[in-house]
Amino acid sequence: MTDIPEQLIEHLRSAAKVVVSTGAGVSAESGVPTFRGKDGIWNKMSPQELASVDGFMANPELVWDWYQYRRELMNKVEPNPGHEAICKMERLFDNFVLITQNVDNLHQRAGSSNIIELHGNATRNKCFSCNELFEGDINLKDKLPHCHCGGMIRPDVVWFGEMLPERAIQNAIKSAEEAEVFFSVGTSAMVQPAASLPLIARQAGAFVVEINIESTSLTNIADIFLQGLSGEVLPHLIAELT
Ligand code: OAD
Image (cartoon, rainbow, N blue to C red; front, side):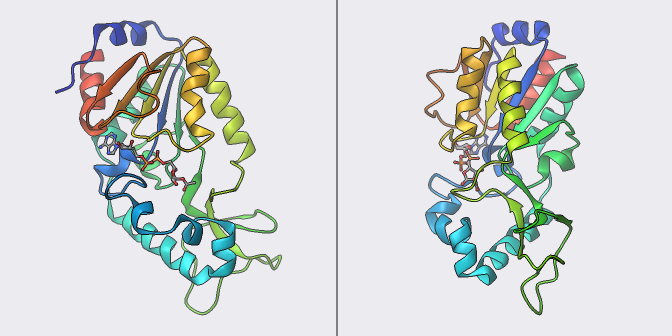
């Protein structure tokens, strides 16, 4: 079991604001595959075909099939002890923000509420033209779904080459700047702008903690690297703290 340094517990006991930023690794123990690494999704599938505007325009049926498959998987799996520990952290600290790159809705299902969704949420859909949101499943049987304005409906997620939702990234940067302890959990720290958030926090004086099964480009910058499964390290941290 990864040791939780006393220094981290002290920082957390006196922190006015705690921020946790998560990536796909947090959901790996629930059975949702990560994107990179040996068994990563982007090792087997093409992000250009499945997660870009050009890919959607070229073959919307293929992209919808892919998202329907992912939604079925997301509905089948359950939040794991890592998601649950992050939810408990929200109750422990008066000022707590969760920033996630994940679109799988597992943090929300675990009970976290103060969440900044950097890359959208795959349980929602939106219109390409007017941005109206459509909750829930879409009937894809007969034809591709269209909005009443005539625009094509698509999953409400950020694809490669697209801008992040403006308010989400602004709030995430502000939270990183205000954080006294900033956790980066289960992310390869390879996708911008999410990868810059721990650096922004560090520059603004935060104590930066990385939790990951392996080191990343962030490891040398972090104050503490806790190597291990987020579903084990985070509950252990909560137990030590309480
Ligand atoms: P990646 O697949 O790039 O990285 C997952 C990270 O989680 C790796 O560093 C793993 O070592 C780590 N990891 C795996 N299992 C873990 C566990 N049980 N506990 C702790 N760490 C674990 O996923 P992200 O960094 O989230 O974007 O990828 C960022 C973005 O790239 C995604 O949001 C997605 C993708 O393309 C879009 O689709 C726009």
